[in-house]
Image (tube, rainbow, N blue to C red; front, side, top):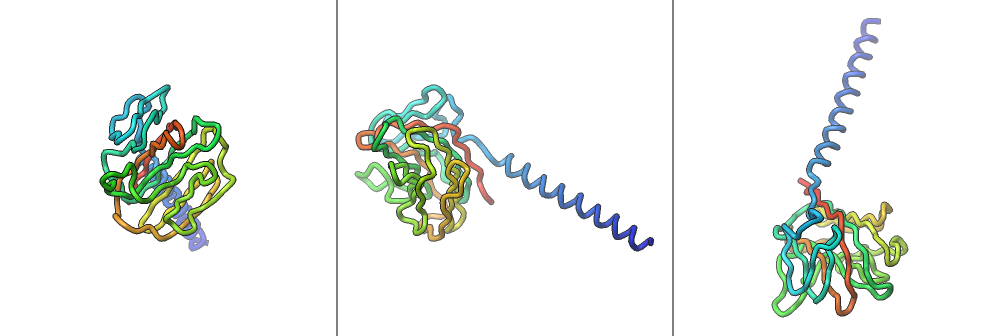
Length: 199
C-alpha cells in the first residue's frame, strides 16, 4: 500500500511539473512575440523606391515599385500579418523574407516572396511545394502566419494550414519587406504585423 501511495504522489508531482513547463513555454513564446508595426508610425521600417504611409492604423502602400523593409534582419521566425488589396481585381503585392540585398537597378530582391498576386496568394515560387489555393477571401482582409526555420517554411492562411516545404537557400537571416507594386498591382493595406523569433 505504501508503495502505491508513493507511486501516486510521484505521478501527481510529475503531472504538475509537466503542466508547469508547458505553461512556461507557452508564456515564453507569447513574450517573444513583438509588434513590427505600432499602428502609428513606420518606426523600424525603411521605405525604398516607393511611397507608404500610416493610414487609419494600417500601413498603406501608396505608390511606386519598391519595398517597405525592416531595419534589421531576422533568421528563424514566425511572421503574422493581415493584408488587404484595394483593387477589386488583378491585385498584386507580396512579403519578401530572408534576403540581404536588392540588386542595383531592381525594385525587389530575386527571392523569397510570399506572393499576394491574385490567384497565387501565399505561394513562394522559388520553394518547391509552397503552393495552395482557395484559402483567401478575395478583396478582403486576410491573415497569414509564415514560419521560417532553417531550410524549412510553412504558411497558415486564415487559420488553415496552406503548405509546408523544405529547400530555402541563401542567407541564414535577412530582411522582411512589404512589396509595393502599385502601377501593376494596386495599393494594399497591412496591419497587425507581429514577429516571434525562434531560437
